[in-house]
Length: 323
Picture 1 (tube, helix red, strand yellow):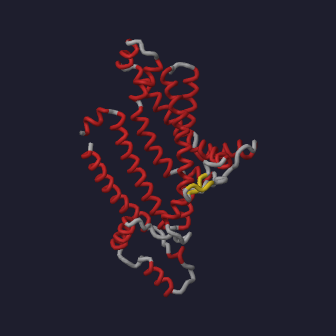
Picture 2 (picture 1 turned 90 degrees about the vertical axis):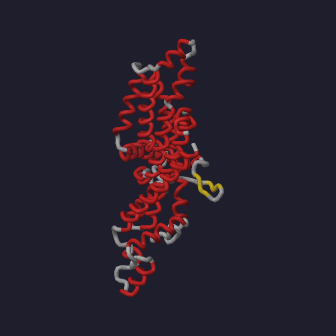
Picture 3 (picture 1 turned 30 degrees about the vertical axis):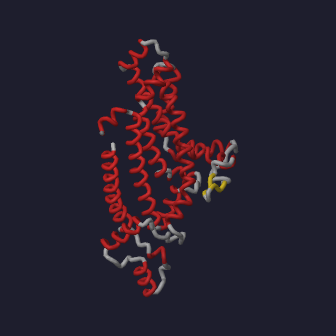
């Protein structure tokens, strides 16, 4: 097990090096941030001084080495637009995205897994057909359209919920959280519901497929032959065996939702990382773009690493095979 962990850590480090090169080339090869930093009619000496101060006059390979060394030291530079350390800017927006992501994914899992288990246990029932039909809608309908419909229905027509913003927040250990206030929950509900529908449909279909396969397996027949009730068979045997793909999807969707909640945050004016990266792209704020992409890559790698460890905890065969 220790050898596997070391191997995965080395692979993660290699992937981060490759991603850093791709991010550097992709971001630093487009646009001219000097046009953002100084006025277009600035004198030539000021323009040259600004270029030298930010190191844009150096060869590309030297800029990349400076970029990597700064990343290793935890220095992501300063935002061209906000004129503050990029890491502080990202950390100030991260709690809002974390709230939205966790609320959407936990809600999708808490609703999708039981519905998928029901649909897999009674595949021919009317309720199962309705559940599977709704899951098709969850896959098919675009996120931005769902968000606009929810705003029109619950914010404009009914006036029950706010159309955007984060609402009231409470500071805990210097971090602002909206989930600790009732007003914050009213602002969170619509964007979290919008973001969760696709994940809920995915959980329903994945759980149903696992249930259908497991219910026809030999160990379920043996368990029923021993006189175990359906509840003990499902929750004591079937759920354990279908938990590995569910954990995989939960981990990958957590990273994907955290990284790509851009559309939902833009529609609901949610002040998170998604809205920050859209504003940074529009203003060509390179340090923020680079830090965001590196953070996304790091999150994907660490969540995949955590999922691999969860495999070993859930399935003894994985531990014995890897050892």
